[in-house]
Image (cartoon, rainbow over all chains, first blue to last red):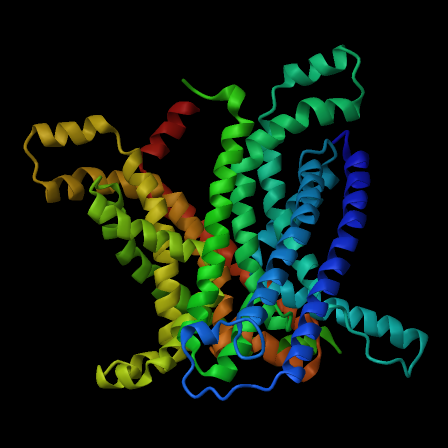
Length: 287
Length: 234
């Protein structure tokens, strides 16, 4: 693939851009939790014997509304952070599997086969424990008495989900790139555009149009897969719900609410994506 | 730690876990298929009262994480323990394996409905008209004309649903079911031997690859006309 170098550069830029997003998300969530704890310390808990639904999901230290909202925020932050990384990885994989060199094609194909074939849960454990073990063995090699280093679950979650998203979106993007009109690309070069301009102004709009339905499905899958990070103790919506259930002993009520929240996000996403599809294909709309 | 040593220690567990994973996938996809057939027919029926509940069912199970669905069924049942005991249903919900199979079946049923709907809509309109014209009853028409075609059209898509189920079944490990994933996590926390994750990954890849080949073979068996087409093509 001719544009591989530029794609890699683009990947690096996006990764750098998404690093502040992660730290900002972590910071604001941490603040919210801290504020909640302070509020809990200041206020005297009213004596509640039988909690109504309104009280259960109230904001503040009596209800679980704010905790669930914080978890929901982390779920959304995790999805939004993973998306650009996954798409850039997908472009790299698509570039590899369309490469003229057989060795590069084999790498791209192997990557997408492995990460589409492994269960997401296993990928998550592989990344989380694998990176932890690697970091600790490196730390031990420098200093035998090194303290136990631990990778942040957020970073592990983003990496694992990004790897999976990259494998799937690689296939979607490869299909889109293969469906491009070769004549338009040639016309771009003929009119004196350089490779980056051809990619940005001719290929990308078409890729976007052709890949959007596939990427939309992957986005919904990504939002759902973020629930898996609750098993590595990342305090997302499902984990917060688990905590609420452990305290209130009302599992059905709380898991229903969690499911409803995911459902709303997925439903809204589908609607937005349908609108976007209408918009990007407005030049191609059938009579 | 030696790799061979790990393999010798771990493979009986891996085999045991694989049996559980296969059983989970087999039971849930089969029940899912039983759900999907009437649901897909209801959704394509054009009757608002029939298609709306199916639409909601599909939307819910495809729009929420399966992990949350499993927790909703398994832990959620505990909230209605008294009622379920009165209804003599508690024996079912107290076993995690039953809850897992129920959740997985409902989940894959929703996905299979969508695949099968695609198949039903892919049946040529002329064939349906011909069946009606010669006076076939609704049941005969579905049994002899529509369903044989619809299942053949939907066959690859249904295979993809089974592959998704093989991977998704790893979620059962979160409710103490000893499938491949749970044995792997348990072994890792005991020995901190990263190699078991790679073994588990290979086990899943072998299972999915074997299934893909089996499904392709079945597809050729279901479409014997392809063989003669291939010869003509040559």
